[in-house]
Image (tube, rainbow over all chains, first blue to last red; front, side, top):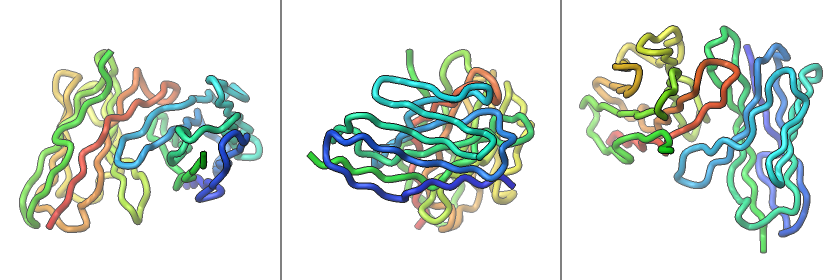
Length: 113
Length: 114
């Protein structure tokens, strides 16, 4: 059974720092991995999708990497801003080719001005 | 273009009543998903539609839960005889197809069962 773990559960940093959020999964036979952010009381916003054949994806100040063999993905946020404060969730596409996402518990990020 | 929309945004009901939650996917998205987010369980998959059929219903927690999709578009999630443990945020997502496509989420319906 696929399990997804995110470390740390919470993170507080001063504005301007570069930071890394970690995601690990137990079954390396994934199709893809998607990173989301969730603001309090809101739905999920898609940040990056990494196909299983890719090693990384970039969007603005965000860079996500994928290492299937070790069952790990990282989300790198450069020059953090207070507006980056949110919960970040990673999710892997599960088996059976249905596109069912299996989520980690999330990392809650606070960026202090 | 318009994103995924869900209604109602909030629903308060009494234990034992039936509720219907609606999802309007992004136009042209053939795949539609329902998830549930609760404090103790995180985000859990409920059901997946491809077109109007549901090849994966494995996440529905009991036979009180059902869902349908019509016209390859709008979907309704119905919870019969609601229980307090059904209180959660119900999220809908859609994508161009399965597996390799990104999923885009709606704002969710916050259900509170008293």
